[in-house]
Amino acid sequence: MKGKSLRGIWIMFVVFVVIFILNMSVVWDINATQRMWLVMDVWSLVLSIILLFRHRLPSAKQICISLILGGLVSLSYLQGSAYSIISSFLITVMAALAVFSTFAVYRESPVQFLRRNGKGGVTGSIIWGLLFGLALGAVNVGLMLSNNELNVQVSLSRFLVSLNPAVLEEIAMRTLFFAFCYSLLQGRISTKGQRFTCWFMMVIPHVLIHTPEAFMSKGVISGLVVVILTTVIFGLPFAYLQWKRDVTSAMIAHGVVDFIRFCLFGLPF
Image (cartoon, rainbow, N blue to C red):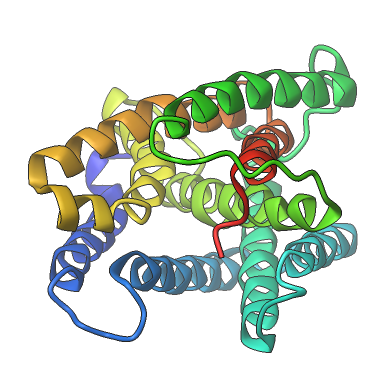
């Protein structure tokens, strides 16, 4: 399989970057960062639909798991609007279905939802997720202390909100992008360029949607520094967990990082 088979995802990424740049000059009721999250939601839905058309629906069990994952994400928006509840549910379910359907076709995928037969089994995934989450959570707290005041409160609502980054972001904004690349490659990653593309798409689009305000308020150089730091400190470790362990461990780690942040610094809304 030649590298040009990945041309589709790179074209999508170029369009995404163009939108990212143009977005910073738009004046609207919602800020630039929120608009890029909406763009990412649309991109995720497009990839999900393409994969589902290509590979069809997964098994009934995996459909049920997808619905459960969507339900968990919806819980994080119980205090939000009906639109947020419905859209987050739809994006998560569609992405999970697409991922499961792709992995069902290409069973040798290096990224798995849960490695039951790996070292330590399910317990191992939980432990790795907690360890990575606590370590990255501590780093995140250290970074945030310089610009944020503590607002310590441990509550169920803060746990529920952390389900959104844990589940939706890891599946719809990371695993799904790998699954799309893997499908384009027909289940065979045979070159360094192909592997780089898979890693890149699992990390950079999701990182970029966090950074429009950094570019707008501090300039291009500072914005790029934020992109690099976010990639190294958070994006790559979560992607590494997905590759070397499984998606479940990455979801746990991501959830722990944000739960710690929400408990110490308050909710983002």
